[in-house]
Amino acid sequence: MTLKNSIVLITGASSGIGRSCAVKFAEAGARVILAARRKNILEDLARELKSRYGTEALISVLDVRDHAAVERAVDSLAPEWRAVDVLVNNAGLSRGLDKLHEGKREDWEEMIDTNVKGLLYVSRAIIPGMVQRGKGTIINIGSIAGHEVYPRGNVYCATKHAVDALTKGLRMDLIDTPLRVCTVDPGLVETEFSIVRFRGDSERAKAVYQNVKALEPDDVAEAVLFCASRPPHVQIAEIIVFPTAQASAAMVHRKTP
Ligand code: NDP
Ligand code: 8X3
Image (tube, rainbow, N blue to C red; front, side):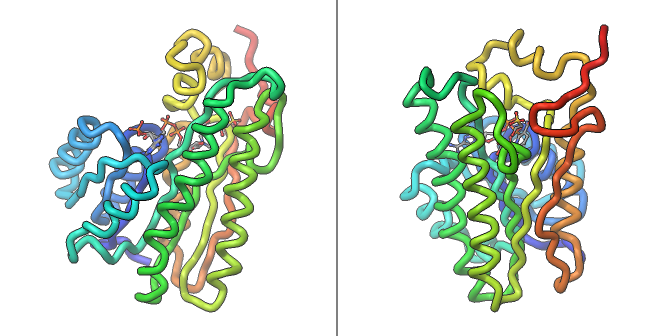
């Protein structure tokens, strides 16, 4: 299915997997709506996409945790941007790696509000239009943490298990429509994810990717693009992508330096 001139809304487009998705969709000729909180980064990305691919890109400075802001952002889309063809629900984060009984309430709330409620708010605002138009692909970025739990992953893993349940539930609820619901669930990807998780502790973040060739954001974005570009009768339900040196959430082979 060609993506040329299709409208693709990507949450969390300012970094990592979301940014790579924006580049891949732009390369494929799509028009992109770039949503995240960091305006300057989105502006730079929009400029880059315009100069590299001639892409029409719209910036949406948005905190997905704010349901009123999400509704306003979608309601205020100009008519030529309204008919979103592909929604990539990517915005997400992890905070901390603590034992549950020692965890911080504010970390739990940020993860649940972003990864679960944020995804719900954006989906609720965008999907009715897709249903009305009889066309649309929703691609959630889950995680291997949505299939397996790892020590100290407790709440982050719970949010990604919730994303898995929401993906499956949504697919059932849309069964009588032409809409498609997909999930791309990566293992270890080197992005800002660990810097965010460890609140700027770059040494600790670097250690996560030490002595292992992690996935690059482009590797995941290619899987997302694959889901979106299948013929209309093909629905890729789920793709799990690991680095070659990973076999489960907690089993990563690190080369001895
Ligand atoms: P990054 O930290 O590099 O990117 C996260 C993106 O989410 C940023 O663009 C950030 O933008 C955005 N974001 C975070 N909170 C909000 C918010 N409240 N409102 C709007 N946007 C928000 O991490 P990744 O690219 O790795 O993460 C992307 C997704 O992939 C997440 O859902 C993550 O859980 C998932 N994932 C990551 C893996 C990994 O190993 N890296 C593996 C499996 C899944 P801004 O700060 O500008 O708002
Ligand atoms: C991010 C990957 O394994 O750190 O979802 O949870 S992991």
